[in-house]
Length: 252
Ligand code: MLT
Image 1 (spheres, rainbow, N blue to C red):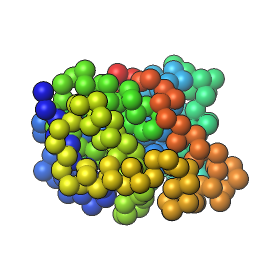
Image 2 (tube, helix red, strand yellow):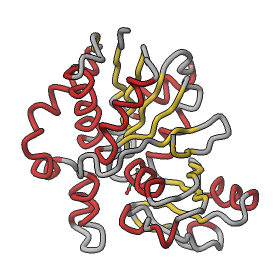
Image 3 (tube, rainbow, N blue to C red):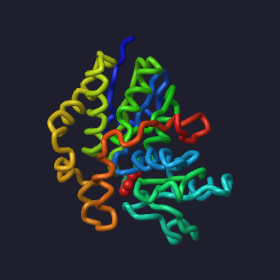
Image 4 (cartoon, protein in one colour):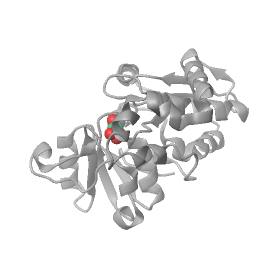
């Protein structure tokens, strides 16, 4: 079985592909800092599922349909407050360290973030949509292998409208794993860019974060700085999240 991998390195690329759709492709979405790391952590702590919404208003509207669900997310990195949402105080922000079993087990979580939830929604026409991060990188590779996936798009959520280093590093780390295990045999140039970036930084990923604007923003905030190291923990969890046709991400 052969696997071809492409990488969508910027929001403009995945938004353009949203228009044409991802038929026949499996999308693996990365928002290392922090949306996909949060989803993976929350699912590993026993959350029933995450429901990503692009806008704050959409998240609030979804809660009317899922009354027991928690509301989570950020704007500018900080938990969404009543002023931003038209009166609803969000239960959680977007720090993986908040998503403990005591807060999230057995709950659905409606989340909205600046880029991560936008990237997830943009890929909803994919054959399958895998939520990935450094926290579940090997589990992601194993899932792709077990399904005999042939065409993979690695989708980097980015920061605002720009590419983000941490997402490209993680996409490159997955390419590296898939190549070494003999699963992937065809990298498009975009995936080649990602793997080469990863190989140049793999010995000191935390050090590389000094060059990542998203990481610098978190490191400057004493309440959020620990998120960066946490989100770089390789294979902390052995599961993947899959977004179903109903738009809910559940453990595979
Ligand atoms: C995003 O979706 O853009 C990020 O998760 C932002 C953040 O965590 O601050």
